[in-house]
Amino acid sequence: MLFTSTQAFATLMLVSSAFAVALPNAEPEPQPVEIVVEGETIVEFAQIQCGNEPHGLKPICPHLNSTGNHGCVRYVKGFDVTGVVTEVDLTFPEINDACDCIQACLNRPTTCAAYVYKFSTMASVLSGHRTCTLYSQFNLPSEVVIEIDVASTNNSNINAQELVANGNNPQNGALVGQTFMDANLNSTVDHDAVSGVVWQLSTGKAIC
Ligand SMILES: *[C@@H]1O[C@H](CO)[C@@H](O)[C@H](O)[C@H]1NC(C)=O
Ligand SMILES: *[C@@H]1O[C@H](CO)[C@@H](O)[C@H](O)[C@H]1NC(C)=O
Ligand SMILES: *[C@@H]1O[C@H](CO)[C@@H](O)[C@H](O)[C@H]1NC(C)=O
Image 1 (cartoon, helix red, strand yellow):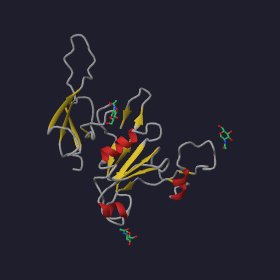
Image 2: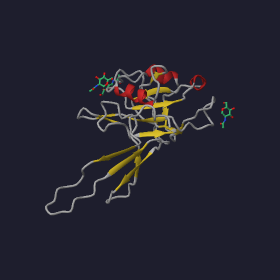
Image 3: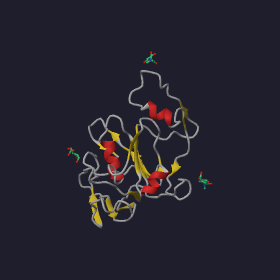
Image 4: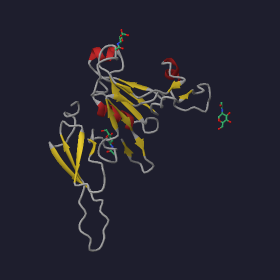
């Protein structure tokens, strides 16, 4: 696993939270227990009585201090869920791991909502360092196409220059693409690439 060196989970960490509504004379409700096992991506939830949700994604980057839930669970490995608008390109050594990439998005709360930490170019593959790219939106579904009027002064912070230079205007919807780690970026899937969301909540917290 890519992140084991950067995260602070104990081998087995139990986290319980109280969902129970206080009812007089009611039996104590079973508490959901999240069991995080280092080296595994999936979290087991034990003692959940009410649903069919036995698994959840293991939180990553618990040390990111502005996250409301002590880490990120809204991420995807092996795929790139990002869109194309407001592109910011960051590289090693500023970005050394996926948590640095998420932090870079958190550091731009007014312009960043999506990040991807992956091999984005042949040069990045040859260097052995994934890149971090930030955006303000996500991949469009396959039959949606949006063209931005880049000449309009109504646009703010869309990074139109890069949008046009990369041939991303119009933005064509597509199935969410896999991430690769071979030099041509088209055959060997990189399961350790990470992409996901950072949502700035109106309460001042960020969730990711
Ligand atoms: C979060 O961490 C960053 C970088 O370490 C620091 O600059 C910032 O003050 C911290 N914010 C809070 C709320 O602790
Ligand atoms: C900006 O938006 C307003 C409506 O909100 C519109 O009337 C105006 O024509 C737009 N300006 C440009 C340059 O597209
Ligand atoms: C990957 O890209 C290379 C170079 O463009 C091409 O020769 C090769 O056929 C591609 N492989 C696949 C599986 O698409």
